[in-house]
Length: 399
Image (cartoon, rainbow, N blue to C red; front, side, top):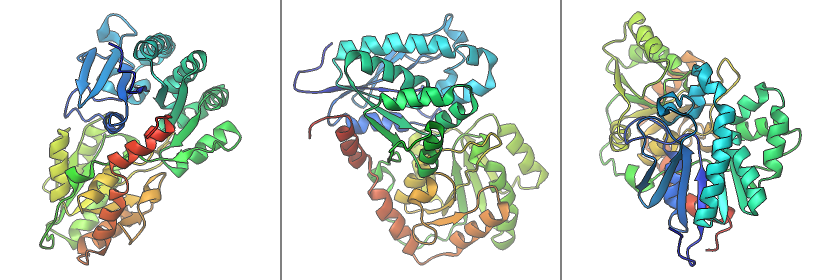
């Protein structure tokens, strides 16, 4: 079905998209699509994976998933809706990259023609950015590229990675980056300034924000994210030993799952922290909201991992800020672009359990309300409605 002539159409292409509510897969591309849908008809294109619907609609956004390998049970690259993690976990997944790229070019071509899209927004340089650059150049459609971290770091490690990056960036009308560290890494990969605009993802401010009323006296600490190396979870668990010595009633809740889950469980047992650490597994977004609202501190202990990679700007930073929860984050990539030490939260050095414990203890002891008020004000500037307005302009949509 073609869109109304009065409503512009755009396509967002991504390798990371929730398969179902509460599966723990980052949903920021979906939320971006919902925010842009106030300005345009939005279709998100993603690789199909086992258990996912080929076609569905979520909050006014059309979602199409294309098949790239048969039988569908062997579509390893997109399993669980997260392309980047599967790339490292399976040799078959790595072999499917060129097949997925070709399938995505054809799927994107068909979708742009069908919807009469005026622009394509590609998330990650490969394979989405590469396919988007090719299709948009051939069809004369605007191309907006958003780099997040893993894509840039991957291309830095592979032969001809810089050549691929230059091909995509030169065929993009606008380049956006999650954080300054990612932008710097992209510039280094290209060999010249990308002129990428810093654009962290957003937050549904009204969903998270609420009046805390009386001062929070709990000692609850929460982590939300995938159990992967760059999230720095082991350092948070080790920090809990120091935190408990100063705050014996402090408890840590770990929300999420991933390949490091067994390792983290083993570390908790080895340190004798069973009574202090709770594993919830992945939770629906509504329950994550409530955990952030009830917690005294939200901790984002991201690191630069053994492959030299880190992440962009984790959306949980802004979500916790909106909830009025004290935020402790590490000084990596996009986090310090938003979090200012002792102004709207606390920063510490990455991969340093002692400094992390110091920051958590300071946050737990703070009852001034100063950082909270500033954090709420910061997060309100990143409400998805504002991000959607800004993105619409990048996509060439008239206000």
